[in-house]
Image: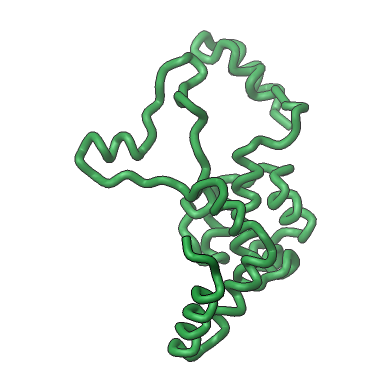
Length: 175
């Protein structure tokens, strides 16, 4: 809950006019798509590592119910908690945002275009980055895919792993 004195403080300053409503505004439309995406990435990495919600919760000092809420996007993950989760899950913070697309013509609340990092890199001759196509991203959220990857990497002998990969390639239709 937002501190009422904070709202009164904002209400007393012209620079913050209209910000009090933003502080107290609660969307009844459900979780934000960004929160759902971040939560699904937490779940994906946790599952790939073979961690239960309880073990992840213990590692970051939460209850498993809180981890469930994060994974469903019901509760928003703070920046400090995301940083902590990135350490426990052994991924960079950016992992949680991989594949997340900006809305078409990304704009600020005032309607001003906001170029993304990729556009900034292009301006300096750098490479662009993009997330996985939606169809591929959906594959990585399936339990069967996660299980296959986990089992595959449990094969310690690299030569055996390579033969398994070759076998699967021969079984799949040619693209």
